[in-house]
Length: 368
Image (cartoon, rainbow, N blue to C red; front, side, top):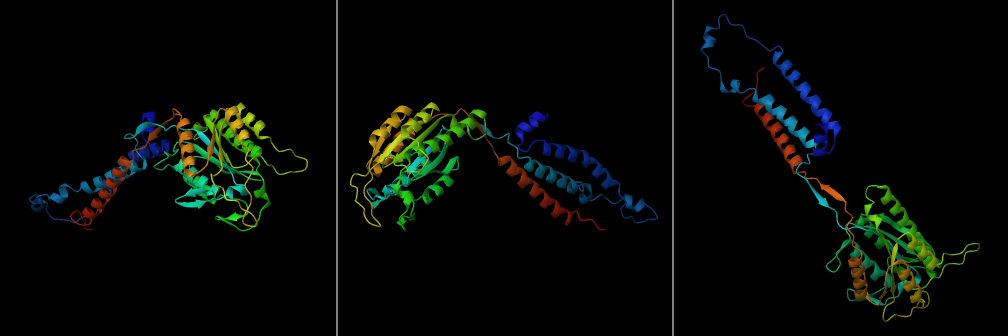
């Protein structure tokens, strides 16, 4: 009996005991109410009263406490949130995706076109990646995926951990900027913007995906998608780590080898517009050196694929291809709670309370 109840009602045993206690106490309250002392009037003889017919209100006076009892039962049922009207549904295909985004100074080149105007490489990539995550007419979106983001220039940093909350990911993505830039405008020259720590970025993203995979294996709720993990690495330059005394920067190829060992597939994208504008001076900087060979090797050794993006349309095409290549059904089943029964129970309970209040103060009003 208990198992049947717990399968059909969300909160579980707490309300089960409350229901049982209520049903046990109700008869005692009813009997006590009927046995309590009431006001009386003395008559010399009952003969005249015996000819008085019992009124309709007197015959149906039991309706008032009955309505109150039914109202309480309905409200209690609403608190139980009955789920017997729900259904099981197979979850969408899901994987774990870590977006690794280059935010070095060269990403400020305005050689991409978005909505009919020239924009920075970074702006175009952010727009397409947002569409890839949330979905548009051209891209289906990744509703069932865990998606995170790592940015890198002089250092690699996890902007957003792997999450199913793609709305929060979108907000963090929109705030992501090149060091020294604020809302699309360069306010100062920043040392960090002059470096591209490619190897460090791969290591950081690999560690995020590794930890997510361990949670999936351990059966942590919400991490099931991380059994299949990929990385989308986008850059417009080559590995150019900052020289730090006493340390050696991770080599991108060796970092990719670690990812491959962990079963992480890396898709690499080289984002170089077809007609780059040369920037120099305080607001301008020269075009970055581009290492296409390294990106190709990283993709090949991890089982991924290399792409070259020369404009916004090609970026959309690339993400669409990755979207089609990386679809996997997790096999998880989720229960879709049908709250209609709870809503109806609550409305019925409130209606009965209102009716009880109305009748007890009108037709069934007792004086005194």
